[in-house]
Image 1 (cartoon, one colour):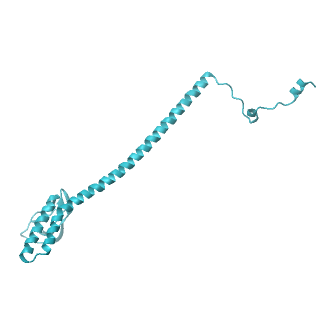
Image 2: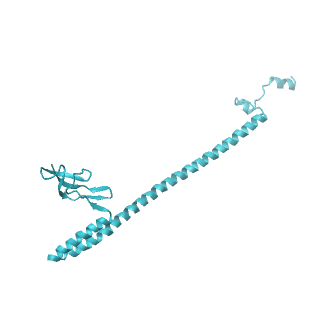
Image 3: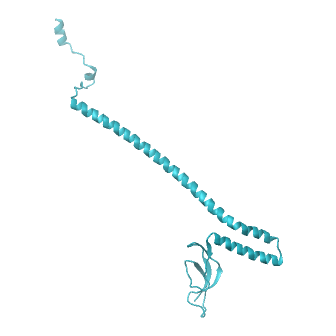
Length: 183
């Protein structure tokens, strides 16, 4: 046999791609290459857009967290300011009570009256008003009836006695007045 005949009879070794069961890729046309480039460009744009959205999301989450912390601090500060404002208005009453502690006789009586007066002023200063209910029709939004009496001289559901004063701040009830109601 000649060398050429041997080549024909001997099985030829396959390329590694063919041995693995894959075929050699065919050459791509210009259109396919352009389409591939277009897809690659779109993929890169999508990746960039995703990275931008992730960054925006992280910034928004951090901003929201900062907002919550800032709001909590502001709420605490506002509560402290309101509380200290009320305490500041009540401290003169406390000072007067301490002074009255050392008084006796008429001075004590006069001191207690002055303390009540200064306490009323302090309450007015923080917009707290006493509920005026005596002699008026019973209002369940402002009063709590704890006693009932039959009195022909009084009107229907008229408040005849205040057992414990009630107070409002603006239009909100702080404490309902405890009252006795007639008929």
